[in-house]
Length: 329
Image (tube, helix red, strand yellow):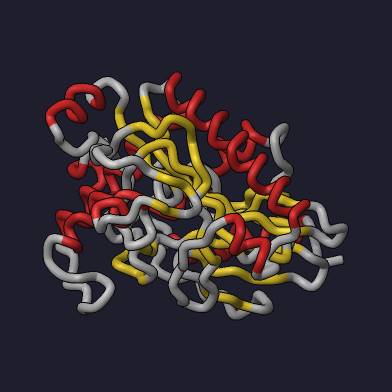
């Protein structure tokens, strides 16, 4: 799907999802969440795009891509780790089991890559060699494959805070997780990443890195939360062009949100400066990239919504229908 196909739908942006009839609203970087009194959480994935610990813009259909891509992966990894999903009442909406989110984001990396301050490539370029408790040799090249995938955890930033790098020793020493929790989380993360790499390879993709969030339910069971292997949480490269581009020192061909990140980084320091307004053509091209990601990863055609209905009206209508059929207990 190209930008010409998307242009008539450019107005269909779900920048926010404030629904006064729903209780206990919490607005995250990308999602608007509502906690029902019976333990269910309604998560509405908006079209906001977040990077550098801040919102950059709103990209048409991004929320739908994230929700439906995560659905594809949740349905293919439930045998590895239980997840929070209970229902999908709308293309942008997940009803999930409310969890106590663990204070550690588990990032798994298969390559020396990244653009943010917490990425291994950024820190490696700054001269660090002991990173996240792993020792990196001299002479590695950007985007080089690591001998084995590694976990590079960070703190889970709440309320707009910044993620901070962690090591296993720090996680345990600070009491962020118990030894048992860390073992379960790290084993699940590596297994999920391995499954993701296999499925991605079948579709001509390299899953270079990703992040996972876990929580605990009322019984203390560890459950996969948030999203999995989406273009927001993961870095995908095209496998066919990767060897040649790596050999020449060129950046891998990708469709993750580095497209927007790189545009911003070229024009400001995103951690210090105001973000310049992102042009309409960049917004629309980014929407096309997200849709291409969905279609490539899942093998399904992206369904454009009815242009006559505002996204928030549709979301509200579908949630109301779901709650009528599944009332609060």
